Length: 353
Image (cartoon, rainbow, N blue to C red):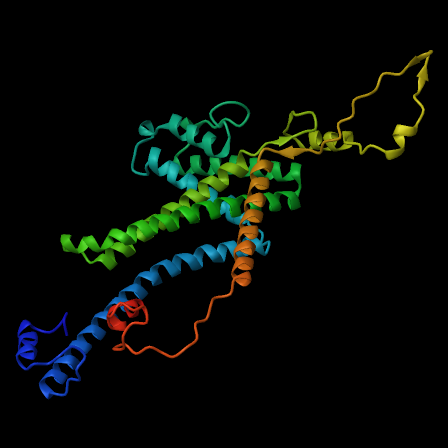
């Protein structure tokens, strides 16, 4: 009544001599209370309706991200997704930016194209054995030629490492990149939601603006995810036991043949003698071939272990300290507050009940 009733209602109740907490039985006052209650329920319904509509936008994005993450956790092969969908999208964006379809060949910015290709895929296609003569190709042929060169580099890398190892690297890299970008996206969405209501002052529907801008942010996040995933996997280098990069399957076989596991009985063996002098020890590399993204994968595993330990610690703390249950007679809203302040319970400690 204090919020929704008109001023004359309070004045009339004072003139009638009604006191605080006294039962209201007049029909006019009762009708006014019912009208105020309907207005409150209508406002609460609209508020819940808007919250549901805002959450529905976020839920669709969550389903897309968690669907991809579930596939990665289940070990679904992602090679075709990376080498065809991701690579095609990245190449299309590069060509659209520096070699538009309606632009003449002389207007193409080939230096920028090859620079971005090297930044994402680590491929030097303007020089060396993989060089492409862009002057003799049209836009479609240039895109196909770049795609074939990039795909060949990825197939060679998989041939060196082996298909199982390559699938493992794909899964770990995609999970690590996706988790980091998704956390940043959730924070950005919270910031957008906090101030989206101000759009109504500009004669804009806040919900429509929220849907539009959140979709653009999600698309930007997924594009960044594709670029970061491709950059990590295509620029990954395979390092041999001696620290030199391995670029051919023959080098990989040679590196694996050099890796010898020391025998435990070798320490008890007598040293070989040759011409009265001890034979010089032959250095043997025992370290397995590695890649430049191994540290990224180890950091991802450490992060997941820390999060799991924190979740277990919080769960154990909640189980160790059960909530205290207060027993006793229930205090009425109009009864004196048990704290001894002299106020009614509903205006003292009952306000937060």
